[in-house]
Length: 480
Image (tube, rainbow, N blue to C red; front, side):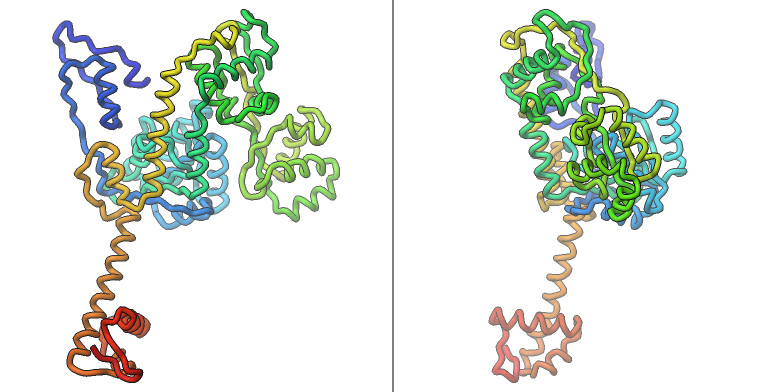
């Protein structure tokens, strides 16, 4: 439950009341104290600094390769966060194929199985857990050496909390964010442009009524199978914006959505291109569905891709059930891995349908949520893209303006490397100037007389000093 949804504090008895929250910015603290009706609140804040935690951002295009390098180079237990349930199985399978003892975790797993996975990871039976953000709450494992995020987080609050699961024993640990330019563009597109206007929310509601052929005043308590992709295609709607509109309608109490609305099926070929081609020739009955997948969904040999069984059925002129049967058979023969939706997505009408023109949508709340999310996304993008100490960025975000450089993040280490290079060059320059103060030198003699650096380092510095006009040459001798 959100702390903002807890009952307001009563001061009628004069009894002191406390509320605690693990993460909040200055604005959040003000909102909390106002919401809880605290009078003259005393706010106590611990520093967010984690001196043993090295924050790193990598802009690699091949995230799988980079992840594998991290896992192989950093000994000990690790945690990998991904955006959704399907990616947990995908990445865990990738790690297993490369000899890493890994497993996946998400909220959709049965309770007993979740507990077993947690126990195996805590006891180091498993080395790496690949999980959604459902993993970690209440799980205390002090010896986690690395936490890797394969996707940009939705907020720095979420990132700090998840990354902070590393190094709780006080020893050196690493929090790595793998985010390239395309991820940043995707995040901006997904969130900054995903908020519908009030008018678009109302129209989405209107289209739902037409989609299910509901009359005004009908539908209360009724549930329908709901194919989001088909709905958006029929009414020419953006999937991302429609999802947001549906969530606002759900918040206002008009509809309810099952989680499977957001989790499409996926496939990944387990054989190479040539082997799949030979299979198509030998098993001609599977040729149409394999062709449909390859032509419609790119990248299925490299990673799991989202598929729509109904769409495939239309392309190969088969029934929906036939497509599921064919995909299941291909999985049994280990041609591909098929991850179907566990259940049919459901949409339930909480209230009877009304005329969308009279729909009561809180416009101020919509704009308020948009601004909050926009600010959070901008902070995430700045953190990933700005070449400033990662620790300083996080601490300033959490209202610690006096933060100092950590010395162990990727930015600080790169600065140190550059400073060491500059200091090294200055030392060679000083030697050259000292030698040339007393006499001129031929190039070979000057190079041999300089004690610091390799021959190429010395020659590079001599050329730099010549270009800067700090030393001169007559073609034979060098002098000041």
